[in-house]
Length: 305
Image (cartoon, rainbow, N blue to C red; front, side, top):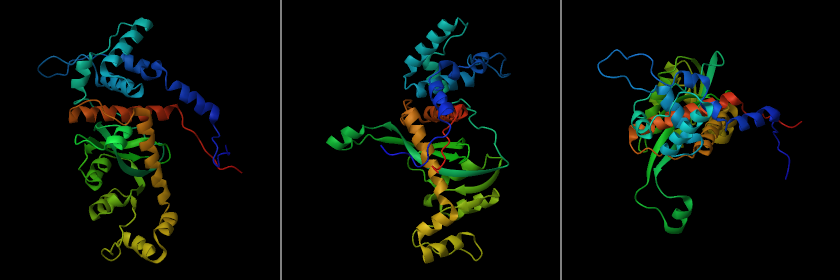
């Protein structure tokens, strides 16, 4: 087996972070346990919910990371609290299933610099459908249901800055305002693929004070005089798409694909809750888990000299 061209230079720290991913006390930490139950009334008519949103989010993160069912996750938490001898109990699995549709998940991390670049892409998450072996042997069945996950990722810290879930028939460009509008950080360059090559997307990115790095579509025409996209169209006509990608630094967009791959490897890439609103809560908890894992440490690669 040949040597890697870009070896990991912080292997001991990264190896420790991989071990800590399986620590139950990392996922159910002191902050989560101190905020396990609601302490104050919400001030409206009716009884307050017993468990906080952070509790439901912690439950769903454990479910995804350890690939458990709702019932098994409840048993895992109850046994953990019994071993720790703390006066807590896991929420009932039916409670988690219902609360998933209304929880507010705080997954955004504070900016780690004055200017943040973003790489944006989407991927599919399976709800119903067969595995690859079944499809190869017997073909597709009619009941194949997917949800689309749209992510905006910081290419430096690899944190997920914005996330949105949609139906599979929603176009990527339609979701871009939902990703960018809530952000209050200063943006530098926004990298996205050709699906976002629309005037509305370019105008939105410009209003946010950022620069768009989006490849024009094949046989794209020029827009109004002076539009920044025209330069990319002219370069592609003269030098070709590979030259434009190299000159513009478009290769950074591949980090969005890396985030999608990590998401599906760590969290199975399949949803278990059946109602759409519940699936949104489930996915947002998984996004929170991804950012929590980043805090443990990531591999640092440098080219071999």
